[in-house]
Length: 305
Image 1 (tube, one colour):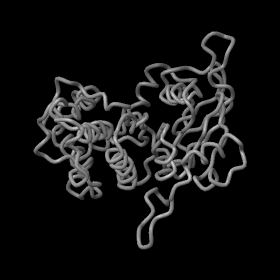
Image 2 (tube, one colour; image 1 turned 120 degrees about the vertical axis):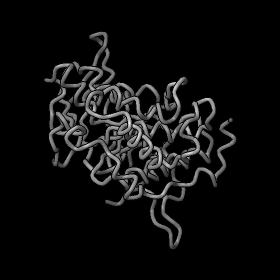
Image 3 (cartoon, rainbow, N blue to C red; image 1 turned 30 degrees about the vertical axis):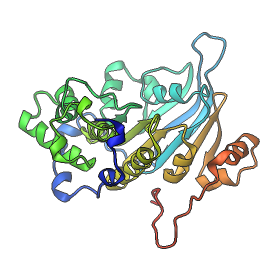
Image 4 (cartoon, helix red, strand yellow; image 1 turned 90 degrees about the vertical axis):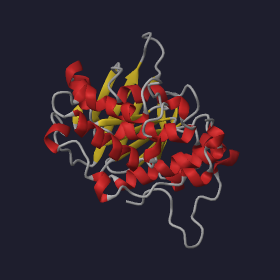
């Protein structure tokens, strides 16, 4: 099945999870083991973060960024501005040359590798091309994080129950649960990738270039899916790394634009539209200034909480 099989009507935005689906979660004591309940204002805080791989040039050159808890923040910028490296720092995969990185109030730079691994269980990650295991069905792909991190804590039947609920939350029809990735359309694979990201009930959802290579219909479907998923999981924080400025402005509560390893501008989409910074104005002039306000009678797409 090709991505051309993704018809608009088959990729409609899923309704918020039903009470039945949402109730199938990892048991609280198993799900939050090692994860202190965080109630602070910012889910992620970076202060004067610098990174040099060769000791000469800095890929990140003093990043100051606060990502509010419970909102959608989109990180944008040209290729080579440091988006991917910044994402790796947030995930704890790369250690900064200097600076502070706090996630859920915990200082990443002071953690052991075991502590960082534990912390990452509070993340959900939707990769650029979904990154599904080719030899696993949709259901098996979603069960994979549970088998890795909850082995001995959950029965297989419990894992299956959670995986099915997450697939339903992501809007995948049950008739596709036992299909391999090669048997699914591009939109279906995105939904399975999102369901897998939700498997451990993460507090922070990260999307790495989620619409790269997708046609306009699938791009809009993924944007809507990000927002509906975020709105259905109260208190969750969503971080989207994207090159799609129009999509960023549609879904974001806040946008951070990187340039030369620094945050050039951080603010609301409206702040970007009204900015006098030359580079930002050029971005807007090249097609970002589209109709961002809803039509009469429509609700705005991005979260307003």
